[in-house]
Image (cartoon, rainbow, N blue to C red; front, side, top):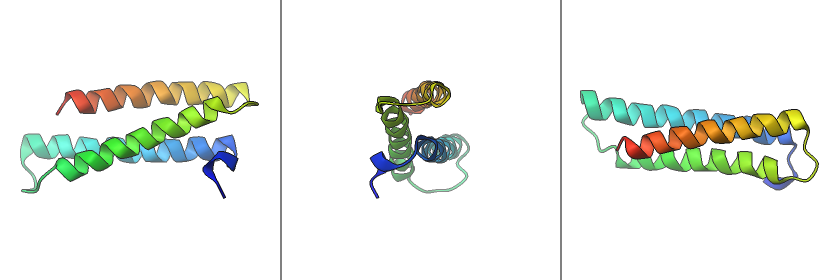
Length: 95
């Protein structure tokens, strides 16, 4: 089944999960860079973090672009886009 055929609530739930996982991985990368907890390259972890956050943003945008969306779900999607965009910019600028 295509992602575009999923219900809006399922897409927002997946967007939230991808966003949270991306933010946690980005935070782990920053903490490891500052405190040197593990002697490992953080480039791949940053890449996975950025890609998960971009997927989360794109899923929230996909919900907004649907034709008949409940106003409550539309508002949640807009808030999620703003939060994920700010987090994404924070992780890009913190590198």
